[in-house]
Length: 127
Image (tube, rainbow, N blue to C red; front, side, top):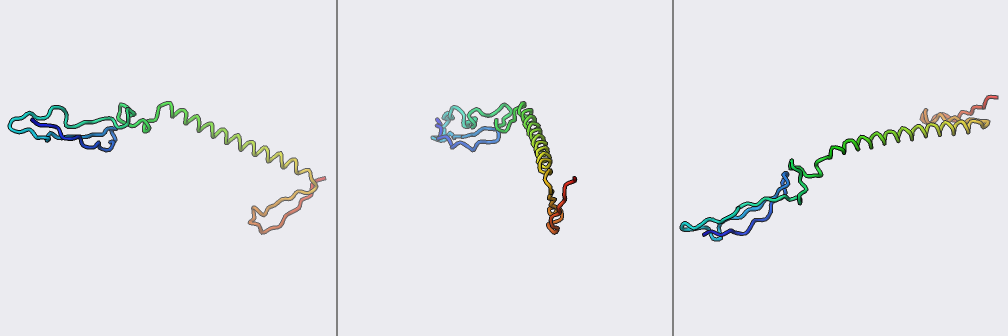
């Protein structure tokens, strides 16, 4: 009668979340009408400790359906926060300019617009 050899090493985890190993009926091989080995010559098991879904994808590859809604909420919340921040900055700049325009002289620096080749222009306030 035949006897099973040792199991081979497990294969690398496949895209179907399975790994395999095999063995041969050759320790000894059956001779002179002896019986072949009983049992399976190949074994397959889940290599993700049950973390595979039914359609054979890993859980980290599958996005829950309610996840899309939370991404939309986060996106729109971020956009709204950005718009509010810009409005606050504009209002603060306008208030700052209004509070500082009461002095006798306004300094208008146009050098940022002309590349720095013009000097400062002094404008007196209206009486």
